[in-house]
Image 1 (cartoon, rainbow, N blue to C red):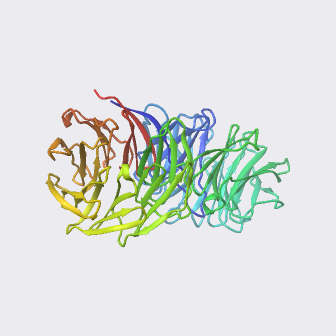
Image 2 (tube, rainbow, N blue to C red; image 1 turned 90 degrees about the horizontal axis):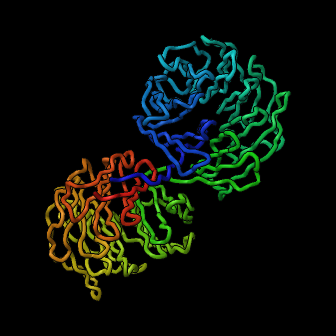
Image 3 (cartoon, rainbow, N blue to C red; image 1 turned 180 degrees about the vertical axis):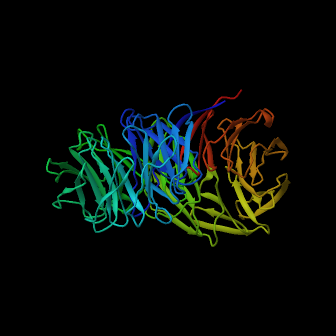
Length: 611
């Protein structure tokens, strides 16, 4: 049996020059955001609790709770909207094709019966409103000529709908059935977000022209604006009202969030400016916000979520961080509690503490991409998509000055002698490179196409896997630094993707692109566990338990399979759908905890109890 113990969630997908619209459910403190094809449900008061909805076929863009909190409507770039229940395993209620292009915003009516959605459509239709159960239209929405970035439903009767977008227009519709009433062209740039106040008396629009304008909720007459005194100096991407309708929160490309007092005469004056605790780079631009109960949430372009308390704004925010892109490597450091290092191909390395979650980012001077990552005591060794190997000293949370070694061709796999960790073996297309510290000892042309490699912990033996599925075992002579071929093992029918020695070095395991894994005895070089053929796609990674009794494999088919060495392969434990889109890294935290990560940018810890 394998049970999910902890999840470390991914962060919202963001895009330069666009706001993201996050939303929540005030009754349960839940909030929603999108990453890839997933919708993530998290809780403001319990940041470690995460649920993921992964049924969309395309990249998701926006998701919202219904007013009663029972349903969620989520939409994607293909114009599809799915409406599903928040309980009982996310049962699907309905699926509608709403627009012919991407949906950028959607909103429920206060009675939960109607939904309005806006976005990009071919031809005329950029906004649609329909009944939530039947999908039948409730009105005609003319008047926009370009993509509609945001729409809002008046929360009180008489119902109204407002929409705004890239044609600089703010359009007002009366109904139901809804029909065009009037249009405002007061903004001089894209209008990014429109929101009604919770009491329905006002609505506000914010735009890339750095302005926020306030209107009467019933007549749509323009009444006031946010003061330009101490205003935003960049595009305003999103806006959210306080629950009492007296204040609004705005976020902007100038890396600040501002809270405004909205007076009875519809004018906004600055109450507080919140600056991001980040380093001040582009990734600290704020692109999303939410004011829910006493929480104020802002989201930066780098995906970091900041949680402030509305009652005490001077208190440091709680920071929720994580990966936005595919996580390609996981390393478990034997500290207590165990520290997990994860890296994604966009070059970010994060630290996670078991039971705590996010515990910091390893700041490196160069944000180069990372393909392979190995960590030993006080050192990280990584390779990217250029010809370089990075050896980065690690002291506590700080990365030291990196030593960069150019090895002359692109590294494919990277292995370190754990007990002698200045020694490293790097596989390249034609052979392998031996490194000692920062010095290239030798580059060996092996005469076949190399796809994976592993170096024994004491550095005396190397196993190199080829594109042809053969495993070549070499002894490494430490004086003359030459490789002498000892044996060739043939069993695999696909390119070798990963090779690992067991912790006690009595065995090694290898896996291939043709979905098979094999455990070998190191001394006799016989097969110790065979028929490990239960994946349906390429195996990306493999790990040994610290006590040498189990092997876990992670595959492109989204599964993690755990085999016990002493039992036949058929008595395996399978974790289906461990990571949507494929598992790219798997490791053991202790003898019965496996950690997996992959395409969905989430990290999950599983408790494994052998039968």
